[in-house]
Length: 407
Image (cartoon, rainbow, N blue to C red; front, top):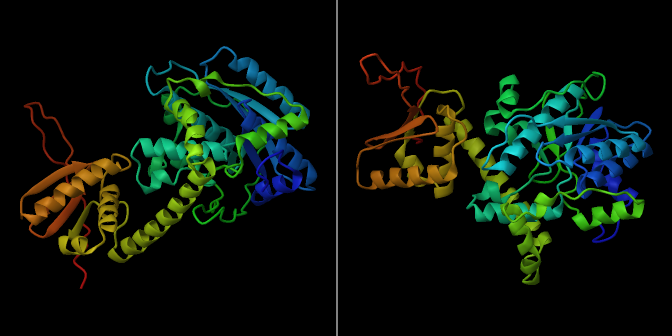
């Protein structure tokens, strides 16, 4: 693709090619330059096709700025002129005093998820750019992320995973807890869901393979913000600027200011994005190896008790052993995703105990890991049942699943 200048029709056709068979697409449009360009390019693409997905632009009013309603109204006017349906959804209720951007992001995705389900659309499109990808890599590095985090954003990802992690939990109570107003009307009439499967976006991202899942698609990850702005300028279309993007109170805004300086030393947005692609490729290979290993060992979600031979873990590369232990904790535990730093601390302590034949017993993410001689036991952490007289006792155990030492 071109390195500068507006996005042309041929490029847009390539960006949206794997979405052509979808019956409907939800476009996340805030009114800023990136998302406005998304709506413009998607509308032009749809008009060039004999049969195209129905488009619905959804604007989320977070209730954080007085200008938001006016900006949403401007998006609706532009959407109408482009022949795109539009809805404005609002994040209601009190706003947190800390972690505001993270909570706003979660609320935004929750509302978009609900809008897609009501619209019978499998895909929600966002306008994340190459610049956003680079900032995400820097943000994850600053937070000490592992390989999965440094892989940054994939082109296609289950929206539920962004909201609820691997658990995929959702429902009315989730929306109520987030203070999100339900979508009063569907963007389009109900229609039969397409059974089409999006092809692999690249080596790290597999397209949707289930008709009922809602997928987040980022078609602009290879484009710079400058190109999208050039596209709008060529079309004479105005856009809004969110002042929070430059607010030094937020980490992303501070990192954004570092990007030009880093680029002088060669750490450009393109190279940061390339790093992310290579890391995702490595991450996919490691996860595929783990999937195969877990299948052979019979380790799967829903078991209540797992037995691992310590000699097996000691013989594995450290990264594989760490992830296998994490898989076991995640399969048995009931408190959500396993945090990498906590898993590393538990693993280090476990192997230190193995080295000196010491006793070991720790809990993590709702699972209890203990050491009995050369055997590692991963089981559900005991439930604390408070009795009138004080104290607690363990709950009943479900049938056990054992993973013996391999010969």
